[in-house]
Length: 166
Image 1 (spheres, rainbow, N blue to C red):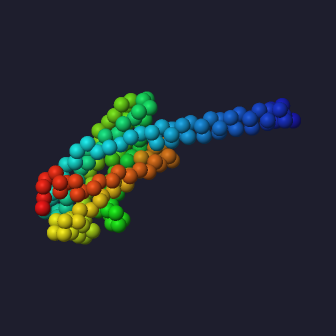
Image 2 (image 1 turned 60 degrees about the vertical axis):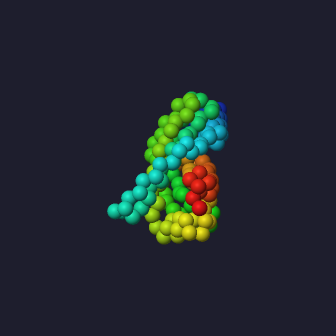
Image 3 (image 1 turned 180 degrees about the horizontal axis):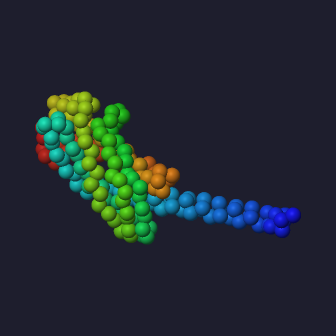
């Protein structure tokens, strides 16, 4: 009989496997908590209008702050721009981002085209009913194993007040 297959060795291997599993679970929960503490806000929005393609590209400058410090590798940030009714105006994704301690600025190009956006913006201009837009995004960590979903809300009526549109 093989000396390695004794009961004591089997218990040792089992205990080692459980210890490694517990450690990996602890690290993944710690990483998830770190991501939940990440703050994001919009610092400016650029708008490009493409007449030939009949669409608008809205590019929010999303500032991501890592208050924990250390290096954090994000696989992707992706999501949608919707209104309060759930109508989708556009989709986006950023690709890989590395956040060191502090903050990083990421431009998020959202191509807006389609009937939902046209109706909402036409209604805003003609009836003075400005939509509340929601930037629903997911921060994907560890190849999508740890998705963190968040939402930023924009009241576009503020734009009307800024430019004094009546």
